[in-house]
Amino acid sequence: MAEVVLREVARRAGHADSLDVSSSGTGDWHVGEGADPRTVEALRARGYDGSRHRAQQFSTADFARHDLVVALDRGHERVLRSWAENESDRSKVQLLMSFDPQGAAQGGSDVPDPYYSDPAMFDTVLAMVERACTALFRQIEPALRKGPS
Image (tube, rainbow, N blue to C red):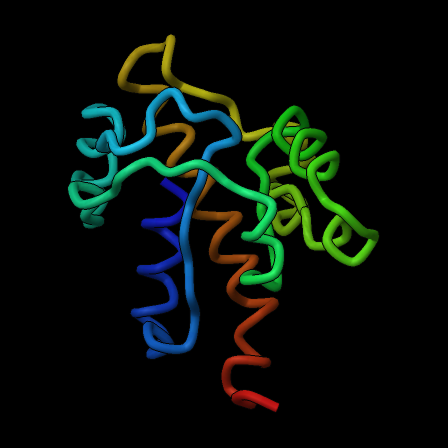
């Protein structure tokens, strides 16, 4: 969800080509699979296209390719930081909800995994992700407007 939403937020702001957004899991159990159909449906109902998403696994080499590594919950945050080989890479790992102080105050620091819930929970999670991705984009957009150094 977060990859699709952040990419669309950037596109709508005219920065589709300025921001590289990708999503990866910490495990390999779904590599190559599409998103959960309930995720795709929740996204579609809000005007997003999640049909092309394919799961991939994060690797330590990804730290060198990314300025920011966003975790959706504290468990993934701990795993990602443990994979970092230096403090610079550890500092790249941030919780998505940390970019949305209002949402974090209301629901905590984790984006809940809706997998074992009903379709309504996918909508709830999508609303959280939209708020946090919009807040994240607001923080990085000034650097995108400035362009590469």
